Picture 1 (cartoon, rainbow, N blue to C red):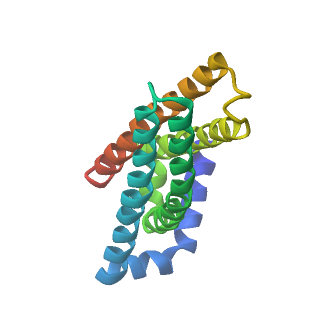
Picture 2 (picture 1 turned 120 degrees about the vertical axis):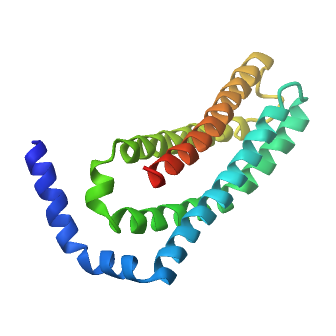
Amino acid sequence: MILSYTTGLHSLADFLKPWQSLFSNSKVISDGTTFLHLAGVLFAGGFAIAADRAILRGRGASSGERARLLGEIKDIHPPVLIGLGVLFGSGVLLATSDVETFGKSPVFLIKMTLVALLLVNGIVLERTEKAFRNHSPSDVDVVNEQLLWGKLRRTAVASITLWTSIVLAGTILVNS
């Protein structure tokens, strides 16, 4: 199995040689791709953490204030998704610039696992937020509202932790 994985990496590296050569021999391409990746982290992560902060601020808020915060959070989704798109596109370009190195790196695999967890967490946040919005404040009893807000808070804490861990993994990856 490991042999076939290694063989597959070599085949993929052969296929990607033109891109690897362009990336390695062009400072503009390599710097531009790295910039796009970091800009994606800045915007997607920055907006996401701003939404997380809004959720954490809502702990003791009234139902009306929480509804307002949920509206703010909903408005943050589009720029987060745009940032994630830039982040993923540039990440694919970076990973394919040296697929054999990244494909064998445990740090890269950890980073990709953290990214997958971040996406799952985002789906949980979005679904919980929708459940909250789909009920008028009068329909949601206090216990249910507290449970939903608690779930949102946990996703916010997980999001902040995952974004920070992804940046740490990326830093280690570049320096290893």
